[in-house]
Length: 171
Image 1 (cartoon, rainbow, N blue to C red):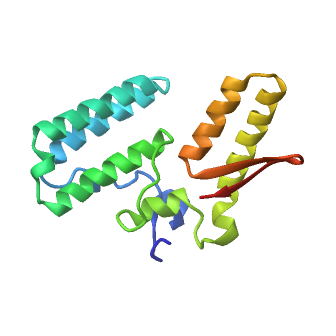
Image 2 (image 1 turned 120 degrees about the horizontal axis):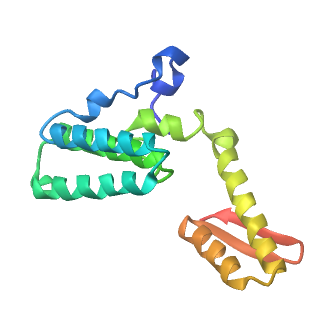
């Protein structure tokens, strides 16, 4: 679970934004990250242009590799890049960050305190996907039904079909 502290999601509303983007532009890869953030914001401000935002991601990663990120031993710079990538992927609905590497974002992604409250949103999403799968099966759209089951399996959800409907558990 995330380390207890004063994270952005726990601050008063007026202190929550911006999400400390200056921390993302720290170190060796700071100028590349700043350019990426600018392009990402421009894309999202352009009527949520997610293809352009995704292109900004690909360009950013390519630039990082051309600047030698894989050989870098500068841990603070690498952590800043990780945080920039995790935060902006989260904006697009991808990736759950490591609570060890980025506890502030992990708190934003998961309910604090763990337990049943922490997994309630996850359960709601899985249940909705299973409802969509059941409807696809009723409509005899087996390709869609199989696709939903494969997505759930890739996410670590084991689905068992029973006479009373589907039952699931986390792997």
